[in-house]
Length: 257
Image (cartoon, rainbow, N blue to C red; front, side, top):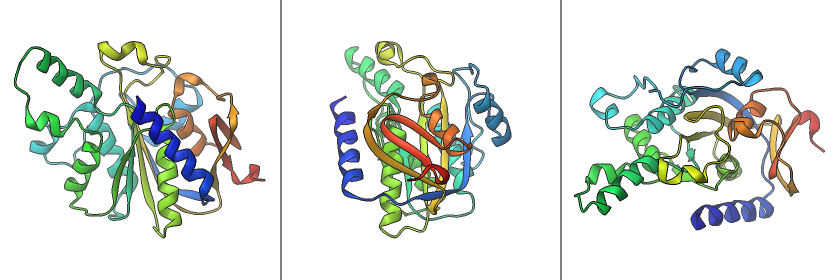
């Protein structure tokens, strides 16, 4: 938990020191059990309803031998990364997740408690940057891949990192946000259950004048709190002029000062 708070503090400090560029979305994708089409997602975001907690993204872009080693969360994250980045290979990719592959980590802790041997493969896939490594290998891409976590505002931290990369000269950056249901030992730490326990979404962004992200004095979170990070996706692909989430304020061009 300290690491999440530290990451959030670093993101806030960075945002205050750097005037973050505005941006536009070139392409986006999202996946949850029962939802894998942008048109269906737009319908769902307009009228959210509870979705199943379990499901598997097809991830046909990855060979079957490699695909079977990837947990449902990783499959969802890689699926939307492939769809958002499309044929535009190369360029930085930022993976943002509050909890990452926590179910795999808990399973290994339980094995340790039972004095059972651990699988090196399971360990390598439990670290927070496992998804970025899997995606890099699957695409054969040696671009800049990053993984961030900042508690409930991991999506914002991912975009801060991406906007920093744009400010540093990157032509475009892919941001991937994903999270899944918490395993039993940590279930009490979950925020309200949410409407999409297992979900992933991604945006391919470049400099532009349409959207921006700012830090402000702390304010109440607007919109449906049960949406969590999907409230950010709803704003990014919708028409609302602004969205306040804690210290973070998302703005569309018509609302910019």
